[in-house]
Length: 100
Length: 467
Figure 1 (cartoon, rainbow over the protein chains, first blue to last red):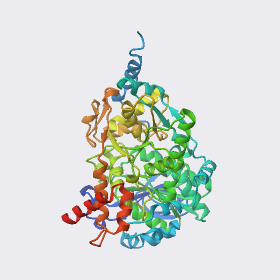
Figure 2 (figure 1 turned 45 degrees about the vertical axis):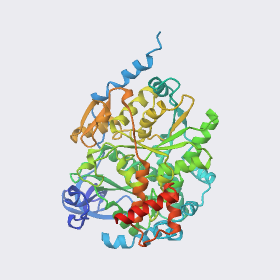
Figure 3 (figure 1 turned 60 degrees about the vertical axis):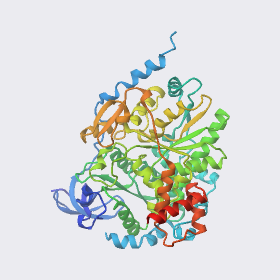
Figure 4 (figure 1 turned 180 degrees about the vertical axis):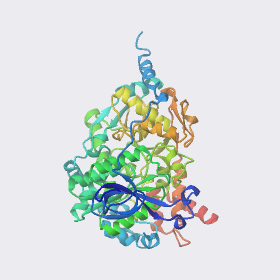
């Protein structure tokens, strides 16, 4: 059970796939248009159940509860060995012709 | 949401959301008075600069990239290798030149009495609008195209959502598709907020100050105008307004647009969406918006790149990542990468220019978690893109990213602007119901494409024959 007033994220189907334009690429028209919105739960609720939230601007939105205390997990990535040669090679190039 | 109803009511919703009567500028079913629309912003350049100064925008440093220029000179033939200057737009509030675009829009929203502002953008513009709204005490909603159907999102867009929320905006994240525009209309209709479109006269005019500053700075610091100014090109506002500012200073620098080559990838595809490592500054926006500028969230776009582009070049994703690392290692500047698209092309163009010439790269953007090239390249690897060191000409967007082995391997491809002009004309001709091409339309197309009257009439005849 998730308590009312908890900060959460909901998933909401904005447009079902059957109403999407036939001009869209196949991979796109095969799926619904979904929105992800954050806000505070109006009432106690369970995960993956329909809920209503109040956004930070005071607007009401409804959808499926998918995340509690949504946070950011993007990072500076992993070590990329394909970028490692760049710095050292530049210093060699800039030094060329300057030592004679 | 009822998409049909919203599209039918588009004009009415946009009029209420901007208090800008686009129809008053209309000259024919395709033509409108562009200069009158731009003047309707009612800001002089000095007023725009005063407003921007109050909002922490503008007066950014123009940095000389000494070591990068030396490297370009070493790769050029004797007597060649221009000095590369970089306008450090990351110094604006919110970390990019987009603050210039947001500043006048949000200022107008406040002046006109709106309670809040909405913008549809997955880019730096969202953070810029959110920051301006914070400073002006306006509510802010940013709508992003963000995830594929599996709820996987580009790390760069995740970072931009974070920045928007840091400045107090409500972010609505959508899955891939052009329905973003209908969602925007729905939100404008429901909230009564201001539409801070990137393509409104305010959204574009705010960047004219950037062109003006570049010319002032090169005149003050180097006692000459730059031979070329190179501008990362996506929706067209950056090219249009920088060039307008430069022309207002009566400088005749060559205006060069640069985009990342994403040919072969569909921007509306749920599959391709996460197989590109650039979310802006690429040909997926650069080509269609040049060839059909009025495809945006306003009636007439204020961004009209074909009026201003003297040249248009493309570079590969791997080349932009490469130059981003070079910028950090040789100049102590950690920026981008997307904003460094023009820098990658400038490094090659400088080698073809004489050593006493100046080339200005007109923007940088902040970097950070999600945006950094290691975040981008890690994400690309997870999406199945092959990353390798080699010759970037072998890169295939959506399949591979090739990091140049050596700086001498950087190059650019020249885009045929005449072909773009013909494509633009054909798009506009389709909207004409008459069998005749009126004088009003011919005059408008001459301004739009910089083609002669004869060239436009010839293209019309070709169009009519093939119709």
